[in-house]
Amino acid sequence: MGAYQGKRVTVMGLGTRAGGLGVARYFVEQGAIVTVTDGKSAQDLADTLAELAGLPIELALGGHQDRHFTPDGADLVVRNPAVRRWSPYLARARETGVPIEMEISIFLQASPAPVIGITGTKGKTTTSSLTAAILRAWRPSTILAGNMGVSAVGLLPQIEPDTPVVLEISNWQLEGMDERRVGPRIAVLTNIHEDHLDTYDGFDDYAETKRSIARHLSSDDTLVVNRDNAEAWRAASATGARVVSFGVARSAEEGFWLEDRTICWETAGSSGCVELPDRFVYQGTHQRLNAAAAIAAALLRGADLNAIRTGLARFEGVKDRTELVAEIDGVFYVNDTSATAPAAAIAALDAFPGRGLHVIAGGFDKKLELGEFGAALAVKASSVLLLDGTATPALTTAIERAGGR
Image 1: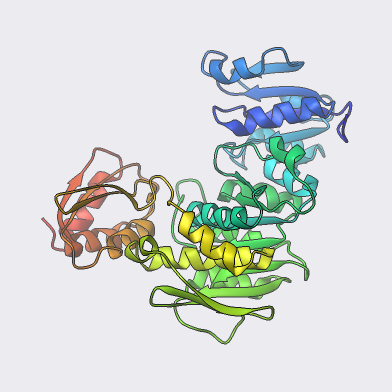
Image 2: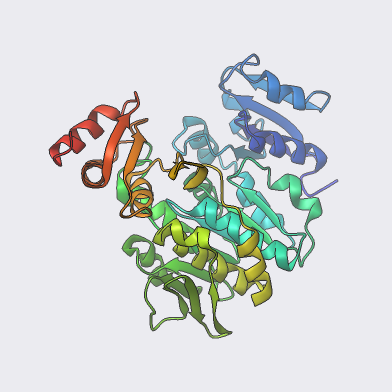
């Protein structure tokens, strides 16, 4: 049994992805007395509950109960990332002194190996996946988890002190890390743009959450940060960690830069250049910057130049991220449905200069400013098909105001 033997643990939010399920299993294995509470009904959670069948877990479904968040019934609350930080039940736990964790903060404290944590408004999934691909070419035991539908704590038994570990970290997970004042050994911040303003108190609140990945780093840690993105670069002056930057042009700081289809670097530990495969070039500057961040993280973790070249060559991209799904009669069909923020969608448009672009767009309104995206569509797209969605009327107006029809 583990450190939580006999502790009463409330898992808040089972959900339909791996996180809540993995956390519940982990604490049962640790010998804890586990309660899973969720606002959804047993019918809504039937598939996930089937995975917990036979485990000694108390279920409190269809709504939360105060007793599971106070010292009368809990020694620890583990919050699912989908649960918002202002939940009155979390407030009750804080008021009564019950500590609140997230899976990500538990993992960071329990991992025997140093962790690379990667976040950003756009590029974090590609950068995380590419970093892991490079590290696997160096050490096949590399672990990739976090905001990817994979339970991180469930992978702890596989991790040795020398195992490379890469976590993709969402802004919701960063909230849990900040509350527990923990961070990775190598933190990567790809960029910060407007996103999720439907759940934050304005852009400054959202941006501060993203920058918090650098807040609890020590002088033994490293922050890899985009120096060309002003909001991300602010993290460099607010951290106690070593700072290694990346950007388009060469800089005086320790860092990485682009030279046509090549990534070059000069740091206190090494210098060099590596040529990128064709797929990184056709996908635009933003993809080459993702590659620069991934190469930086992998090098800092210990990967050699051969592993970098091998990982780049093997990397096939990530589903839904500037994904070339077909080429028919000279027409490229590209899936970039992960571009749910204007900056990400504009970067995708910029990846194909000089081509006739036929764009399918639309979706849920996250209270983001759509003027710049509308203008980009008006100028760069030969045609635009707008799908039904709460953001579509505002996007239509933005396109028309920019002269599109």
